[in-house]
Amino acid sequence: MRPWRRAARARYTAVMRLAWLAVLAAAVAAAPAPRKTPSPAEAVAALVGVAAPAGWTRSAYSNAGGADPVVAFERGADRLVVRVFGAPGSFYATPADFLKGPAATTLGRRPDRAGSARVSGRRVRVWRRSFPLDDEDPHTPYLRRRRMGGEYFCVLPPAPDGRFVVLSWQRSGPGFDPSHAGKRAWEAFLKTVVLRAVRRS
Image (cartoon, rainbow, N blue to C red; front, side, top):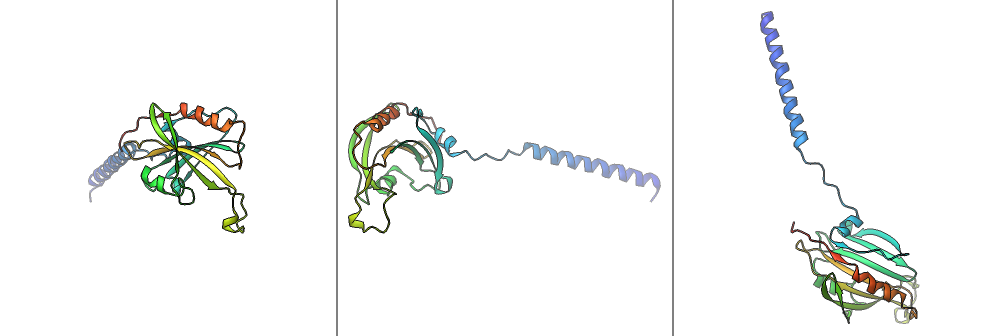
């Protein structure tokens, strides 16, 4: 091959290589960035806003492989909890499923009605249930186990994407609390709740 043809082919190859590199770079730049998985606290905050009670310890975690995020506030034997269900992979797909499940029943028995409360501008039913305390000796015969904790909770209407919020006040200490501190904190907590506007995905 004549020298001038070899030079022309080399220039053509170099131009084509640069063109392909430019196309590849443009494709990479146009590709969407990987979607960041929200933390449990971010996932809850995207659906519902709450005010943290002063002096309570806050924690956040998720269940069901990340599908069910939780934010909790604790002080002594009292615990205020915000749980979100209904996402793909959730333990509970609907509020009806939740009310029949172990997180809402008392050893399989339907929860009791405990009045109603106004939450985020709407009236919702409040339920009451009991649950065995974790500090029980697992070797104690079932019929002799009497130490139970109590929980009041309400289920908010589902968002357009199917997720729904459960708010609860759990008391893990047996016996009556004469100060009513947990009850007052629960009632004040419900007044701070604000449901976010969520679009259908």
